[in-house]
Image 1: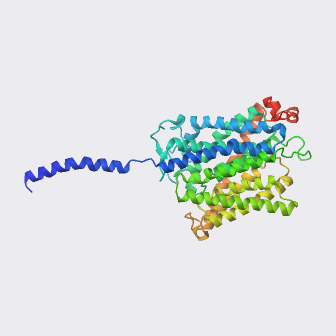
Image 2 (image 1 turned 180 degrees about the vertical axis):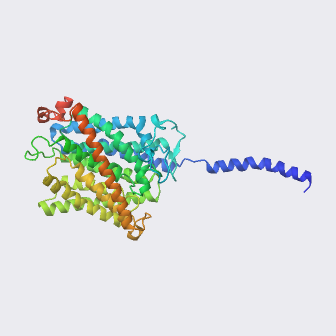
Image 3 (image 1 turned 45 degrees about the vertical axis):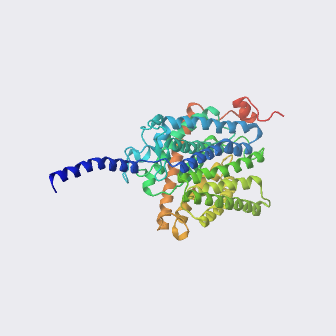
Length: 445
């Protein structure tokens, strides 16, 4: 090659190389997926819909008429409080991955840092998602709705007897010390404690339901029973509200489970299908168990069965097949029926609206059965090859969550009780929290 030819080739490469570099940059640069973005926006709205108005109506119908506004008010206030705390530091504590290393246990294995506090660095151009790419702002809001509904579920355990002021402070501290760390350990990715253990929790069986159910049980034990429980009748005052609320939860749960695929893809489609199957099976399972036991099926029973099925399939929705969803749902309906009725009666604790009986027990059952039915040999779509080993991992995750949540929740409640008191007075309880705490009535008849 002559000098002139070599110089010509060099000139040609100098022209081509920037183009190749630009092409590589274009390939590597993340591109917003409008379909996935649309699905995540929809899912986010559906999950928020689960708390307000879904859970507010579901719980509101189950309390006595003098307490309907207090329960709804708690759901609305929690929605506002957790939204702000999530922005200030919650999102960062849950999803900041700074300092995390695979299978290395350090401080960041338990909780994230504060590099994303006040949503630092999140702009309209910020994109997230492992495979599906959508705005990080959407992911922040989607996860915010999970953070909202989890403490709101706890309300059902101590309904009709906790001071509104104490409830607000408790929820803020509990969110900080319990919810955000558990979410980080399970969902933040490689380096999170439970993630590295291999715990399967697709949409929140551990993070949301076991967490809230156990906290609810501790709360109702610390506060004590409602005045007159269990001898005084405390029947739900408006089961129509409860059924409407359960229907809203059922519909909203598609965003909860299918949205956790973080994409409009086959995983989301299967999660939607198994959610519907499990919920239907649980509703029928509870209904027939009650029918055989008590002689008649009840509207409250089938509504509770619906929620039990939704809870149990939540950790499994992304990895189990249709038949796995059917078995999980049927088991949840029957098991939660007996736990929410017989167990509470035998042990004598006053879990007002069965937050532990449905969310705690249903979450534990679903988390363990996920280890079974995620196996491809049983129709699942996970990577489970050793069912016994995965079930043990699931049990470890359940055990850790139960112990951590119970201890921290107990400490928070006892400290608050000493500082400001948790319960309303007997007179206020007799009058009802609507008047005593908010100077309003749910009904002016």
